[in-house]
Length: 289
Image (cartoon, rainbow, N blue to C red; front, side, top):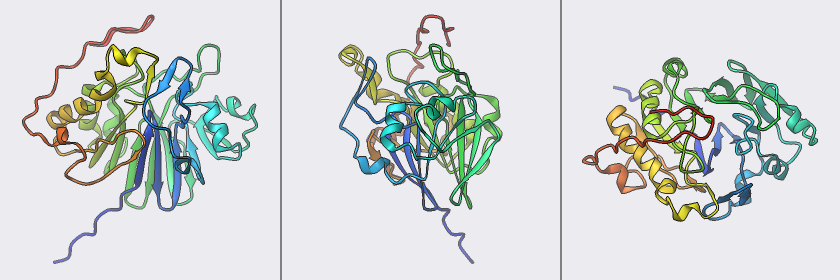
């Protein structure tokens, strides 16, 4: 009797917020780079990033045009010669800064990064660059090489087509919060992200978009929103998608595929999923129950 060989897994490092270093088939791909300690009124929580994590890149993927995902200063630090794959319609935000290898893509478009096929996917999120910048579709990305298949969701809410997005998915990197105490339309809270797992059916899930940026001084008021969302996501995942292994990784650290998990909270079978938080909408945004 022969045993099927284990499917290869990428090397992943969570740099914080929506920034993930994905190393697959010899390619180094960085998502939504945000490398600085300050962003407008937001401050980065935790230690500074090791520059080696954003050097020698084969490509950068940009999910949408919001400043915390398309951060021009961070991209300039990486280098104007970097290959940037981003939503079609927003290219001038980079070409006017001298970037020479900018490729605009729309949902369904595929490009090759070495041996890795990168396919842009739909995302349910506002793709405009506020306040007066261009508009472009918000994207997620599927990365494939051989049997390995990973999904970077960018910013999105749950959408029905997730069920057919990537059959046989190995890893889903899903946003579970944001940069403050509230969420608006087009985001997933921990419960919604766990519901997405029922559609995506990955082997592993990595919660992202949490615990990295916070308005100055507000962390003393609601400190739990910095640390609780990934653990809440893991508990909801046990209810909605018990076959998925959740990999909790602090910002700035490599993702471990150890089945034991890096955090005891993920291994407690008796923990009950928390009640989904009722989040007041930001001004001008509709409330989601």
